[in-house]
Amino acid sequence: MRRTLAILGGLVVGAGLSQFPEYAQQYTQRLGGAVDELKIITEDFDKAATEAGLQRDEAIGRFSKTGDGFIAARGESMARTFQRYEQLSATLAEVRGATGWERFTKLPEYLDSEIGARALSDYQPAVPVTLEGFAYAGAGFFLGYAVLSALVGFLMLPFRRRRVRYVERGT
Image 1 (cartoon, helix red, strand yellow):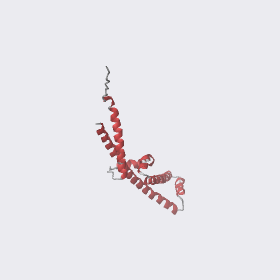
Image 2 (spheres, helix red, strand yellow):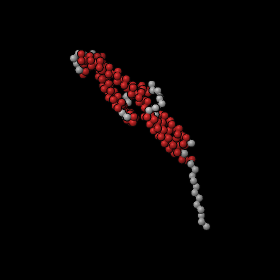
Image 3 (cartoon, rainbow, N blue to C red):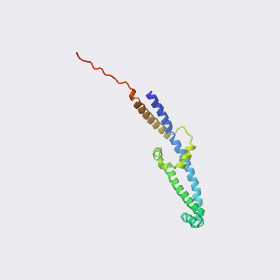
Image 4 (tube, rainbow, N blue to C red):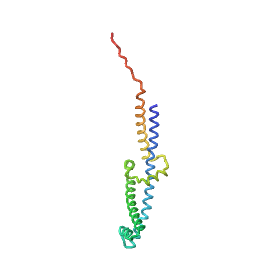
């Protein structure tokens, strides 16, 4: 029974962990899409600023100098958009350059919660047919097997029969 439960646990954890590379790929695609769209906005703004003879910071500064609260808020919004573009671009470069293990261990650093949540809501499980997918599945199997085997073994301790040793007495 212990071995059966451990194998079952290994299969479940292995199947679950094997999905990480697929999720990472779908997350990377969404991240790339967000960067592409922010790049279009950034380049359009920079082009308009250049045509007006301004640098980006000078153009944003003009928003706050108008005295109009709405326009000033739009300037702050654009500044946040540029900051997000730079942050997501740097993250995308890191994710694309990372190994499978680095993507797993540095997930909290890479993960943008908004993009991650959207990727998860549209996530479609996939059969891992890459070396990375097989590695995660194998690691998950061994981890699940070991943990469940140890847990079942521990829980069964009170129910184990004790071996009684008989000592022969010499006459």
